[in-house]
Length: 274
Image (cartoon, rainbow, N blue to C red; front, side, top):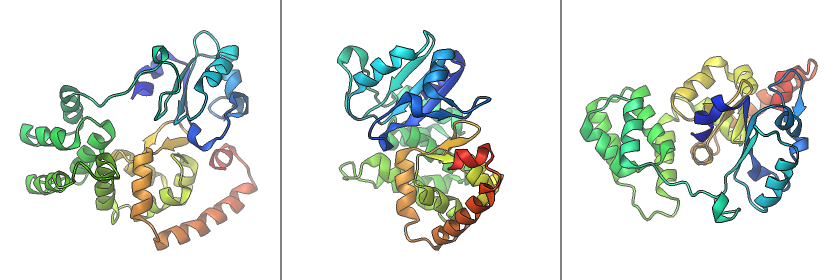
């Protein structure tokens, strides 16, 4: 991703899901990765920070002007949106990866014969999320050639004109195959229902291995010591797959118990969860 490639250029990278906020205020966002809980405007002024505002809707120009008013010369603001929210000179339309880039990504993730690699590119396209999901399930579940053939056959049966979108349907297919193995983990993701989830909550409720196992599958990405991120496509697939799961009811009770227990101590993990 862009943030991964640029992370060494900045003191810190801050990713924010802006889709959940009607109005965004840099000064009201608390950042816990420093010695104290500092607000985002302050660290952008004092440090070199890349701020990624994801899924913005509305007036991005106003946000840009607010950011420039306090940010240091080394800080930068990156805004993503389904629609273009700035003029063309300051906007870039992200396209899917080329076949060559897709081939390079696949070969960096898994050792497959060239025939299977070309079929994945043909059927999945250049969407890095879906390529990662497909490659990781083949790798982590140790598919033999017959199982790879069967799996790719399922993908090839997905019609191009489906309303939900091909990427979403590929994600649904992959998540469905993980349901039996990760039913509790997926149920917790569905219950939290957020693209950024607390590592503290996962570790306390399910143990540290749960999050590590999900990372291996490319379902979640650990974005900081306190949080992990889940792509909106994956989150939607998870919610559909575990709908009406009894595990959700059990986890609801556990979360309540955890909050009551941790409320007494109120350590940094508790605040990152709440």
